[in-house]
Amino acid sequence: ILGWAALSPVSSRCVYAGVAEVSVYINPVLSGKGYGSILLQALIAESEKYGLWTLQSGVFRENTGSFKMHEKAGFRQVGYREKIGKINGIWRDTILLERRNQNIK
Image (cartoon, rainbow, N blue to C red):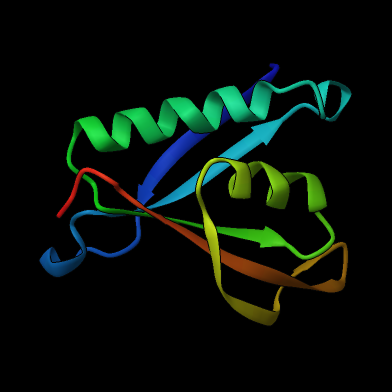
């Protein structure tokens, strides 16, 4: 598997029907080769095709490559979560990012 990408609803409440969480994962062997950007752009195109108005993403603070990829795709930082989850027994912080659909007025 080279990688995968998905859009997931952030809530079952109808008021948030147009908001989705972005997930993009690339095999570490292929990191930095642009595959993540290709998948992210495909998710953005699909989200706009179906009328979603906001995409959200949480990026681990130390994952500067993912942060830059999201920024390049039009995401902006809107928040920060401290010690939101553990990986291998270590608390991790995330930067919260979002992107608005430019076609929604």
